[in-house]
Every structure is written in C-alpha cells, then in structure tokens.
Length: 330
Image 1: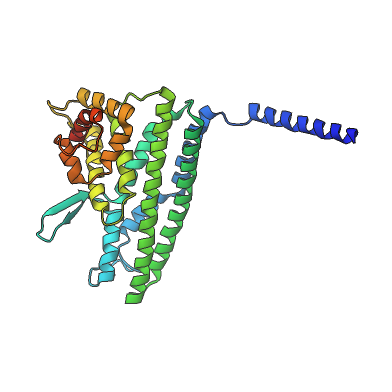
Image 2: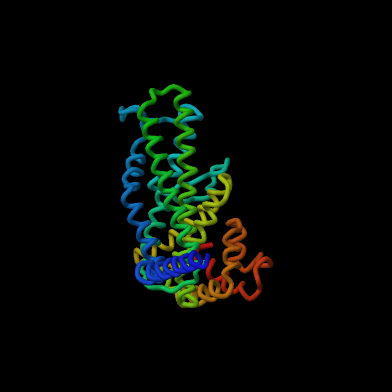
C-alpha cells in the first residue's frame, strides 16, 4: 500500500512541476494577453471580408440578377425592407421627421458607426502593449473578444443567407415577407455586433485606465471614450427609442470627424483645456454619473448642459458634466 502511495505522490509532483514549467515558459503573460487577443480579433474580422460584403449589400437594392428590378416602396413590406436597409447601410446621415414635417433627429447608419468603432479600436490598441491590469478586467476583455467573435460569425452567416434569399426570389408578396424576415434578422445581429463592439472598446479603456491608475485623456481619447459609452447606450435601447440615442451618438461622431479634419470643436467659453480638465475629473472621479447622464433622453441632456435638471447627478460632478455636455454639442 505504501508503495502505491509513493507512486501517486511522485506522479503528483511530476504533474505540478510540469505545469509549472509550462506556465513559466509557454503560458502567455498577462502583459501580452490583452494586446494579442485584441489583435487576433482585428485580424479575424479583416479575414471575413465583412466590409466588402456590406458594401456589396449596400448596392444590392434589387432582386435576382436584374439591376433594373429595384426594390420600391409600393407595399408596406417593401417599405419596411427599404427602411431597414437605410438604418443599416445608408452612406449619408438619416433624418427623421414628425407629422408636421419638423426634424425630430438625425443619426448615422450602422455601417458608418461600425467604421468609427473599428477606427477607435485600432487607435487604442497600441496602448494595450505590455500593460499590467487587474485579472478580472483582463478576463472581462477576453470574454468580450470571444463574444464579439461569435457575433461576427453569426453576422457573416446572416449576410450570406440574406443574399441567397434576395438572389432567388421572383417578387411575390410572400417572397418579400421572407426577405423582410432576413433583413430583420440581419439588423438584430448587426445591432448586437455594435453593442458587443462597444463593450469591447469600453473594456479596453478599462484595462488601460487600470494600468496607469487613472487616465489623462487627450481630446481624441476623450471623444473615443464618449463614443464607446454612447454607443453602448444607443445599441442597448429598444427600437422605438434607438433613433434618439443614435442622434446623441452622432453628436460625438461629429466631433470626432471635425477633430480628424482639423475643424474647430471648441470656443472661448469651452476651450480644449477646460474640456480635458473637466473630462478627466468627471471620468476619474464620477464615471458612474457620466454614464447615468448618457442614459437619459436627449432633451434631459440638453437641460443638463444648460445647468438645469441636475438633481439626479451628484453635486460635485455637476460642474464637470455641464462642460463636457456643452462641448459634445447638447
């Protein structure tokens, strides 16, 4: 009996030693996991060729192979298809109106939003190199990468299914209803893809902030942070409220676009120094208050920018929030 116990003990020691050697020499260190996982995601998404597929779908506004057989708005089903295509694929700003013909909101399509999301991830990616971050934050980042990859696979398949359907219908009402179902499915998957992309971008920023203790934002970094938070909200809300929060997201995109084109986004009252000082204080001290404000309706945000309707926000955070909301355009 003692002989067998000795064997078991010896085998256990070998296993432990073997694992220790593997962990020391082969297991990726936390400092490189965050960067490598995100880089692999970027490469994987590129390999799917989704940008080209979406560009092709953007121009595929007809059925079958007949470019003259364009999908029109002659039925409610076709109108719904055209509406979904606009929300997902419009190359220009989408504008909605009330019954009196007044503009209610304007916002960007999913394909435009995704382009800004991709650029934001590429911008912050180098900051992940050799960072040391909390294990829970690293775990969250890895989970978000895996969820995003799963979404990409489902989205890629959904595009192929939709294309196959649109190619093989002849134009009956029943066929268009089936096609509408495929467009609805694609829209839902696209929105989820954007939501998980926002979660990923936020988790990257969390890891970077944790590594440095706090984050001193430059203007581009601050706008990317606001973009990630605003996208998370707009892609979380229901379909009825989505245009209003997408409008708020557009305000951030507009500032990013102006910054990239060297256009002015500041004025004498709210200059760049004031914006960055207040943004850093807001995020580093009252991050939750900023997220709370972003989750409110556009009208409420405008009131907050005017230093009103702030009772729901901690008093010490209010002065920082007012400046940030004004610079963003509320």
